[in-house]
Image (tube, rainbow, N blue to C red):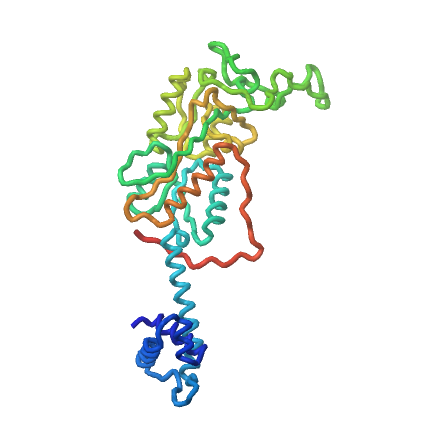
Length: 370
């Protein structure tokens, strides 16, 4: 029995209190409508209309059913809408892996963009390296992952690759920051000279001056105008390199070192750092230079970021998810994440997500199990 259809018929008859007019409203003939009401009465075990008079009237059971039927049909519509939204990836929980070096501003923009476009979708983020994410996807512990390109794993779909240009991270006391490019330290010269506190900020106290003496301004030729001075890879010769461990992204690790050697920079020594904060700490301590995006270097004011001449190092990142038993929201998330990462790579200003003073409560969380 199609209970929903019979209840809809009942409510129209209860509104019109006339089978003929109700049939016209429903666009059906009167005999099928009368049969529908009779079947509903038999199913419920109660008479819904008093037909003993010329004008039909609702019985006590019929009056009670009017309210119950309305709530039942409204609940059914909510159920259908919820299931439709879940199937379209607009509801539920999406388990996503993100790389450890993702800047806070990018993470904030990603969560805000997804929350604004799909308010019923809850993101469950996991900080994982690319190999860890691939293992999570293979074991169904993740629904999608933001991984470094290239990834050659069968059975995965992927979104567009967003290319993020990397620059070099240096201490503010580095000669490469205080001098124009091309004037590298001569052979045998220490690339990390000892400098007093004043020189780290671009001035030195005058000879013989006291604590109250005014500093000399930094020479005008040392102040970059507009875009920061670019640094060539060859300018880094003689430096150590602070880099993530190879196992965190083998393909990208090998490619980066190949590009460095081809550009004239063969690191004297490699220092490995999994955590971005540890990486910045090693650079600050003079243990080497690092290649990162500008947003990472901004975390430490005593470090500076300089673009590399010719942009030889471009890190690709994209969303991947399983081809089979994919989460309904995976493809939609890939689109939204690509939009955020593309804006970041291009340096486009972000628009703060809209907030409501009285936010609508989100529906219950639905965890999708493939």
